[in-house]
Length: 179
Image (cartoon, rainbow, N blue to C red; front, side, top):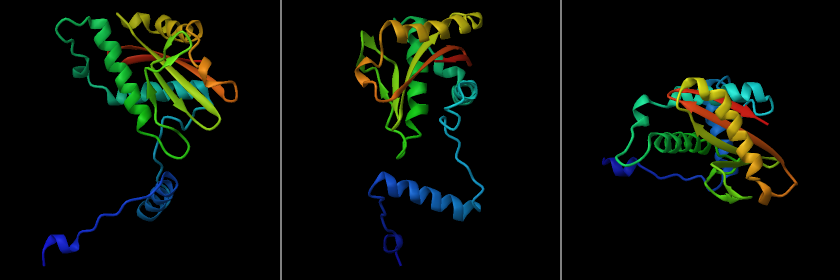
């Protein structure tokens, strides 16, 4: 008997069923005690949320990801790498509660780095690289201030809460400020 005779393609037709199947598989394969950790587990406690972002960045990013390309400034390279890393982290958790993360969309008087939408809340992330590890606190504050000054999220309306998140990164260290 060939392998093709024993192979079938199964697809899940929508996000709601995808979530149901994910929970069904976790409960049946892992006895109901399994938990998939997402970045938004502690979103309502800004201190823990900031720690979780730092954990994901520190755990996922390699020092080799910070290579500088010919003709590109070190600062610009780092901003791009961290921005894309944040986008990837945030995009990985889309389900019926979240929309895909959006990157570099025009909003207010500029472009935010990343936007994540939930039914009741929008999250805008601004990422800033640092020259040294001593700059983390001030650069995270600067990222938050940029969201305010550039009025990011102005086009999102006032029906949802807007959470502003400034992320400063140096090598594999980061600082997160949330307002």
